[in-house]
Structures are given as C-alpha cells and as structure tokens.
Image (cartoon, rainbow, N blue to C red; front, top):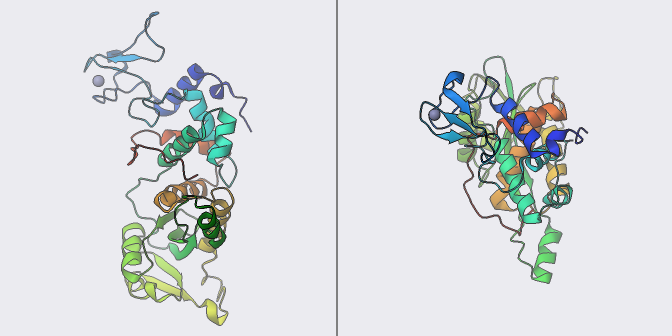
Length: 311
Ligand SMILES: [Zn+2]
C-alpha cells in the first residue's frame, strides 16, 4: 500500500494533490464559476494561509476545499486523504475503530469522517443502468444485526437500538454497474419504483421467482425467472442471478464482519460504499481512492451530529 506517499503525511502536499484532482485545468472559482486563469490570482504573503486564491470576477477568495466535504473540517487534509485511502483499500472497508487508531483521532471523528467519505462515493448519476441488449439482475437480501446481538443488548441494557435484519435491493447490470437500496419493505410497489427509476426498461430483467417482480417484469423487454426451488440454477447459461448473488455475498461479509453495528438509519451509506467498490472493481486501490476524492465536491450530508452508538 502506498501510504508512505507524502500526501498522507503533509497537509500542504495533500492540498496540492486535491487541487490536481479537482482542478485539472487550474483553479475554478466556486462562487461564480469563473475558470479564466488570467482572472484568478494566487494570494501570497506571510499573513495568508497557503492555497488561497482570489477571483477577479466576483472578488471573493477561495480554496480548493470550498464546497467539498472537507470544508470547515478541523482534521488536516492529509488525514482525510489517508482515510479515503484506507476506506478504499481491499474489498471489505475499515471500521471506525480501526480508522481512529490509524489516524490518531477520536472514534467519533473517525466515524463522522467515514460517513462523509461514503457520501463522496455516492453515485449521483441520473442515467439508468442497463438498456437495449443489456441484462439487469435484480434481487433482495437481508442484512444487519444478528439475533444474538439483540439478546445481548437486552441483557446488558445497552442502547444499541434494535438490530433487525433490513431489506436491501440490488440491481446489477451484467458486466456493468450495481445500484443498491435499503428499502422499507419488499413488495411489488416498492420494487417497481426502484426498478423503473434505475434500470432502463429496454433491458432484459432477470430475477428469481419472487412474485414481487412479476408485474414490473412485464414493463421490460424481457423477464427471465430463475426458479431456485425447482433446482433450475443456471438454466441455459443465460438464466441466472449469479452476478447479484455474488455481490450480496461480498456485501454481507463486509457488513457482518467489519460493520457489525450498522444501524438502520445509516445502512444506506454502507450500501453506497459497497456499490462504489463494486463499480470501481477494475481500478487499482490508488485509482479508486482518487475517484472517491473527486466525488468529495458538491456532496451534502443530511444530518449534522455524529452518533457514537453506531459504527
Ligand atoms: Zn468568482
């Protein structure tokens, strides 16, 4: 792993790295969108902190962190980049506990950083996956707390919340991308909404025999149904849902192994992380980290206070 890279040890080098990723063609004013390099001045002088620019169109100063998840953070930028790198290494992610040890910060800060990083991993593309000639496998699974945890929480009286397994629906385009959703319940109405807003109806849909897919399946060019109960795994080689099932096995290993106290409220963020990792599976860890860091701009969190009770 390349953690000896100075961008992880030096805040100034980290900022330059961020500038190179976010401004490949030079600084961009986040206030007015000015990109004219002749109308942007780098501020110098002893009283100025490094990395401050002034826009000569709107006269406002700015740095590369304005409008990103790093804005207003007290954690040095090099630690942020290291956190991105750690979260993007390997297949399973890293717990807030481990993150706090590696970065030398509190558990609470590490937990909050990790969620901001997951926000940066979010795929905000409006374009549905699939399309003509493409196959989408859809399936649902249940992840989260184990029954034994619930008993323990009950016995010790600790407020871990209620760990009931939560439904996650994933749509995977074969040879393509995945999109996963934590849904309130698995029924035809919920799944139709997830499907038609995320999977192009020009696709072939492939599901198991669960009746919730029956009606929406008719809206697709074709709907293949794999009947597991009848031992029809892999009927003709095209009729299977192995791709989405493989994704679920990675998701479950990760959630149950690394993030065992995932709360219902934050499950969607963990799911985002696993989607991102799957969708960048052909990249190296370093390339994947750079992709995530690029996503740090324009993301907003919908909550402010970190909760210390979940990991
Ligand atoms: Zn400006």
